[in-house]
Amino acid sequence: MNSWIKNLLVTLDDNLDESTKIKIMEACGEECPFTHLQDDKLLEIKNSSENESDLLEKLSRQWRVKIENGNVYVVFDKCYCPLVNENIEGASKTLCYCTMGNLKKKFRLGFDRDVDIQMEKTVLSGDDECRFRIIV
Image 1 (spheres, rainbow, N blue to C red):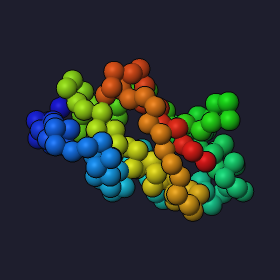
Image 2: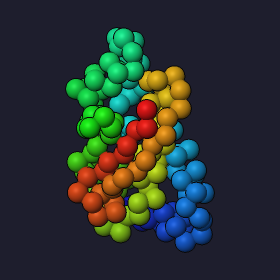
Image 3: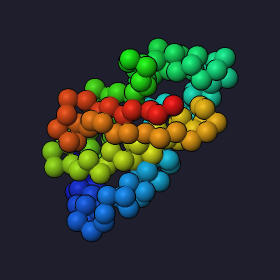
Image 4: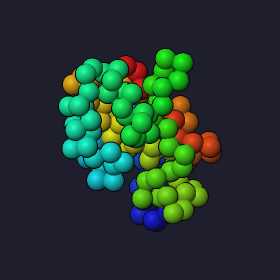
């Protein structure tokens, strides 16, 4: 992991409460240039969809959306963040709030409304995958 990223995350973790870290990192995620699904591609899928259910179904075939037991998730099999994915050792899960912010933006674009996201698992927390539940 890049040392300045590690220092930034350590500083955030040492000096801020969880809600403040979430707010900061989600704002960063809204503007992340490393997103897996570009906005224009998302809008193309949205425009070809009949409704939210159809959009989710298409996203489950073309992106990382999983629909399980009536719940909607975005699942990554590893950390794809280019700031840490080459070496995740010592990386803080605080960085995962950036992904959460990016997902909020994606679903706001797709649904034309805000959605809540719950971060259930992250590779940076030692889990086998990153799993974000989308509250639709």
